[in-house]
Figure 1 (cartoon, rainbow, N blue to C red):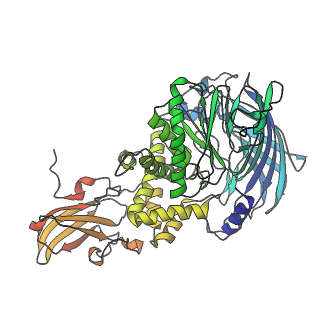
Figure 2 (tube, rainbow, N blue to C red):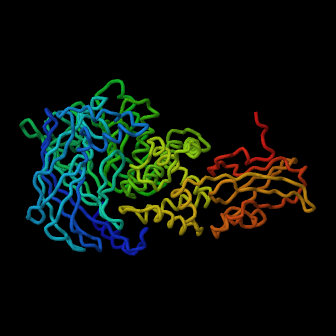
Figure 3 (spheres, one colour):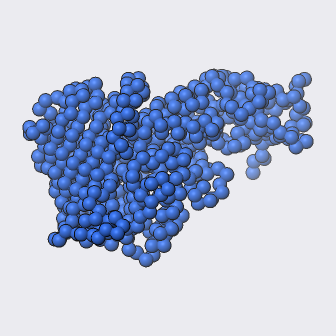
Length: 611
């Protein structure tokens, strides 16, 4: 990504209003790090130079760093939460509590200065609290210098060493990372188990490690012909330095994270997609998975091109799919996924994590507060992509998400999507809310404003909010501008409450003018309605009932198909068909099944007999 583009985007965004009704701004953090890894004891040392620019209108009197690896110690918040929540993630369970000192993870800051002057700081769990000698004024750039040390924990959650599939190092959340400060203030959340919020910037990272290890990382390798292992330029002789270690030099521009993975048995393949993106694949030299990983590579290219077309162009020069971690997790310009899967699962997890390059690493929502935006939007677009790339032929690729949401809505444990990701009472409720209900938010929006408007909304959202931190309000404003509909009600009811949708056909009766159909709203959440009326002679007609508070009518309906607005406060609504009841074969609310009505038994006339 060129700096000029970022600069233009920043100045353009000054005119954009965010959720707090103030001019948009965002902080900038540029890192230079040198790290030396000991693969015998999995301990490392590093120095960090951080150039931090306060683009906010506020004076900052202190700053915070994340120390994620401190979560992997007995008694940490992640450990205690996992042992006290009713449905613990089985990957974590009570495993942290049983780690020995040699197996635990830690991040320790040894020295820290600002513009050359020592600072006072305190390690509080997974957060470093730093008192500044002098405040950072609005518009000011300062330089923090740090020396730190870490120990890579046994692989438990996302990051770690010696994974269940034998990957040596999954290095994510591995360095002291400046917390985000935005219009809501500091986001110095402890690492308990969920997601993150990061500061945009550039990373210049040098990683020194045993020469037998092969690495994949965020960013572009700067010394490929020295390193080799498939990174070298074609036709150029590799000239590796003598000694026991090599230093891998990566630069990642315009990202809010940096991750890497390493293993001495990695196979490294690469291919260049038609858009110029270089795709890297690093996976264990395991005969049982080689074929799947080879076949994954053209599918990953197809997925990349699908997302380019349906969201917007992938902006970075490379993307890596790397075997590692404990499932699937997205990072800047790469994903770590477990690799011992059947082919469909391998493509599916790659589709989801690659889609995160857009919905989180490009439109970088605060995952801790709006987890449904990155997980739900990613689930939505990856379901569409899988349907096409894998030729699944599904008429509705979102049926799984609708079923999952329906179970959540009827479970009695649902919490609003505005709940902080760490505050869900049940892990299962978090998962269904973030992934399934988040996906339905988009697919159902297509029902509300029309599929063409939804697709245009996604593209304009990309154009407006790439390389920024959008909020739910920012997204719905884009949808309003594209469609012309008023949609605040939808954002409010779907994401900030647990109100449900339930409309039914109450009565169908003869009148002097034809057939009166009386509908009833049983649920609290409002919706516009689409109905299909089928007659005994085989003909049919569509009926559209606008929702009054939308102040808008969905395109695609003829004037005689559009009925009077339904105001939400009225529990019932009626309209008349110009044929006799005896001529009516059936009436159905939402034949598309894209409205998440929690009781479809009353959506059809005549009702099916109950068993």
